[in-house]
Length: 232
Image 1 (cartoon, rainbow, N blue to C red):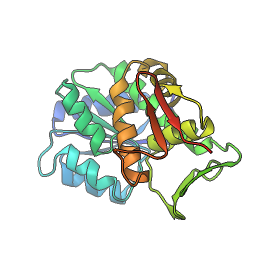
Image 2: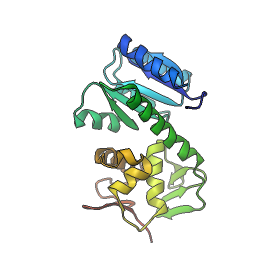
Image 3: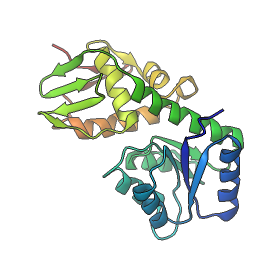
């Protein structure tokens, strides 16, 4: 059973699909807000903050990708991108825009609820993580208890997913973590084979903390194995 205070915004222009998603979420005890076009979704996210956004890619007025990009300019609210396309390219576009997860149509009620629970759980785990100490290397500082990342003394705006990846790596600085280890610890066991999720988020993370993302100083790749955080 979900927390009755958990609020989900469903942005979907297909009336039947919208009703179906809203009904299933409400039956699972979520509070649901709805939007039927991209501009309405963006306005709702700005004015009626929720715990999670389900955002369809193909919407009138403003498509889901652009909505996601604009939201990431002011909010780290968890976003699940919903798409009728099942190609990896469309999934990657959604993740590149700033989404935390994706859901491909058609899907059943249980898959919908499982994805929602997983993303909310990750967000709550990030908020509850009060690991002691800090990671500091060069100009980068990760303050675990404050859930803050600073570069040259300035806060770096990370999504909950990006922060959890960085925190996992920083807490094991100098040790190579495999893709499966990172996927399992950040997303959960059902995601252990979804390497594109990790690849896109690592790319987004590097774009925010590295001076030259193509030649990273902090988040290092170990080809064929995984990733490692630099250490002294």
